[in-house]
Image (cartoon, rainbow, N blue to C red):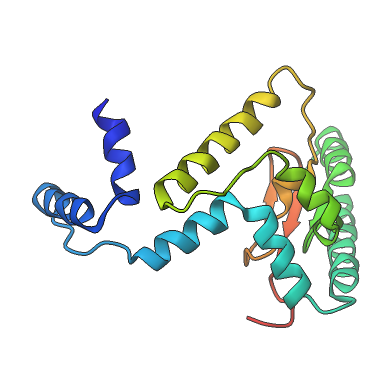
Length: 194
C-alpha cells in the first residue's frame, strides 16, 4: 500500500511534495527535486511519445532527409555485408550464418511514415480521455490507458516491426537492436539540426 501512495506523491500538492523531499533528504541526501515543469514535460514526452514524435517530425525533419538517410543506411548495410564476405577469421559456416543475419537486418530510419498520418496517430490514442483539470487525474488516466493498451496485446501475435515501438524520432542515437535484428537510426544528423 505504501508504494502506491509513495508513487502518487509527485502528483499531489506542493506541501506534500515538500514533505516527500524532506524524507528523501533524510533517506539519501537528495536536497533538490525535479522542477514541476520538467516533470510535466517528461510525462507528456513519455506517455504521449507517438504524438510528440509526430509533432517533432513535422516541425524539424526537412523534406528528403529520410530518403537521404535511408540511402546512407542501405550503403552501410551493403558495405558491412561486403566486409563479412572477405573476413578471414570466420569459417564458411559462421560466415554463412552472419551473412544470412545481415541480409535479414531491418533498417528503421529516422521515423516511421505513420507519424505523418493524423488518422494513424488518432488511432493510437483512441479511447484516451484527458478531460480532467488535475495533474493526478491526468496521470492516472495515462497510466490506465497504457495498461489497457498493453492488456489488449495479450494473446495477440507479436508484431516484430510495429511502427509504434520503433518510432522515437526525437532520440539522438543510432544502434543495432539484437532483439529484432534491426538497425535503428533516429534523429542523428539527418534532421539537419541539433
